[in-house]
Image 1 (cartoon, one colour):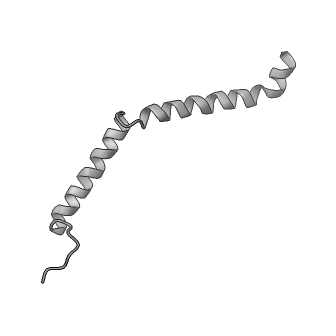
Image 2 (cartoon, helix red, strand yellow; image 1 turned 60 degrees about the vertical axis):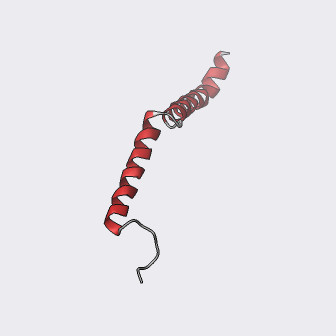
Length: 63
């Protein structure tokens, strides 16, 4: 066991750290998570502001 840890210890540690980071990101970016809600609010606010500036964003020219 000691030889295995000496040889593969750093690789095992790297895998554990990457799995932990992946789990944290999965929780943070879940559909009802804080990060996802803030991102949705930011996009909604941006497009609402752009529509207010552009007159509704219909895409059809006035005749």
